[in-house]
Length: 368
Image 1 (cartoon, one colour):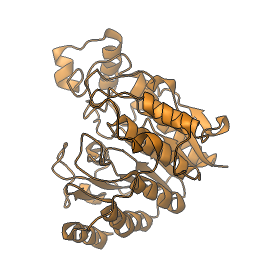
Image 2 (cartoon, rainbow, N blue to C red; image 1 turned 60 degrees about the vertical axis):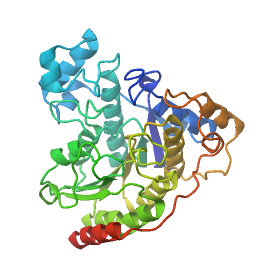
Image 3 (cartoon, rainbow, N blue to C red; image 1 turned 90 degrees about the vertical axis):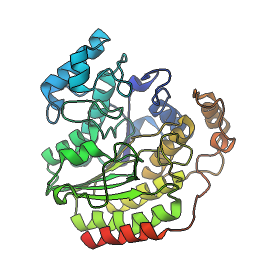
Image 4 (cartoon, rainbow, N blue to C red; image 1 turned 90 degrees about the horizontal axis):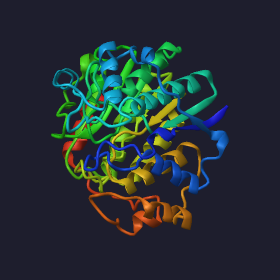
């Protein structure tokens, strides 16, 4: 059995939501190529993601919606009725050339990850193209056309997992997953996310019929506060549920440099979460998610893979890795701070642990 396997696809290369969309950047290819330059992706640890077939998508999504998504990609345009009914062709969820094939491939990667861990082929799998946690049964939402976490969790259950814990450390609340598993006794959802940030769900008291634990976070949430949330809330809530498998949605938009949140984590927090769950979970799937700064996303997800697969992260990047990062582009910024081109691990961003976070964590801990 392999300790960890990596799932990727060429579908992500050059795929853009639009020139000014937050997803105008390279993410999965940037992280994959960075890991390759580090020598962390030998061929025997890599798997190519299949594209999920429509029938597989129907396990969660309405057939009419899946058909509309396929038609939008084929036609390159949507009608006003389709836009209103399914949320396709909007500013957030635009028409683009791979709008069906790309998310269907992300789902295919999640389904493959579930099969790999449940068969015992690998103990952990990284599917960085996944984590699209906002999509609903019949409409696109929040840059997400298909809900890969929901479909992957359903497949884990179908393959024999009795209980699954879904952990979401994206800056944005995973509303689509919470809606899908409302009231479930087999899926426990644990989310930390920025308060008063789109989609404006995931309040502390919102428990999805007993299935969810939500920790909304104030601005400038730091590494010290993350450590408290992980050790005193996330890990105990996971362990108490006695899961057969854990799914970690590892969005990179809670990092300090991200333009779509006001949180202040370093990527050390992501690596800490992966390391702790790797040791705790019987079977572990780690996806991507949000993240809208090309340099921080690439460094974070490459480091996630290093942590998951037991590799040491060096203090300085080799020349080929630095040159790869320097070639990334972003319309918001011509060139990042030098540290983002020469290192992979951020400097820690520790700080005061605020009373409001201590109080919220204690309240959630009492529910475990």
